[in-house]
Image (cartoon, rainbow, N blue to C red; front, side):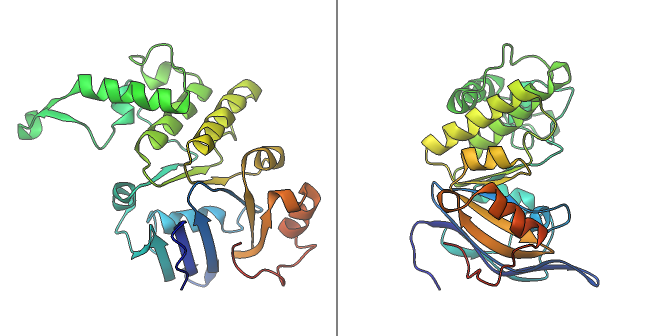
Length: 259
């Protein structure tokens, strides 16, 4: 067992089976405080399955998750969020008919007067906290009173990321955050990720974008057929090497856990 005080997340033998399908097998992974790590691999390689076990969207078949120095077994995503893990999934999980503050506090609204089903929200506090969250990540939304429905894809993604960064006390996870965005919107999201790095936030980035990964992260972990097959420091590898692991041209025989 490692005693490294800088480790924010560790998984040991993390495994998920769907009947006879082994979607994730014996994943050993380490993420240190302030580190940005990319998870790469082909479709179906186990990347999203891995994240779903960490965030308790699904319950693992076996294995251990150690978060912030203690073993955890979250009952669901809400417990993971309360522990300090925030996730931006591909579907964003935003409410189209609500404004930015309402989306930022969706599921954890600030209450001014608790009157049961007739409770009054503390909209001023939510608005002020929203502005702080947007400022922290460098997100610029011209009018936070606009509903999400009236925003561009890039603005929606930025709101989702700002919500994540505003509440994540220990770990942010992003699943393909720029997959459906244009060049300008992608650049805005990448600047947010750089800001999180400067602020010492730990981050896991799932991405197929090789240029993006090499620009933004410290380390690349490659999944293939449900297993981690490579753990590569960005400064010691290149895109061709990563592709070789993704396609199986190179095997993970030399993989011995996270750096």
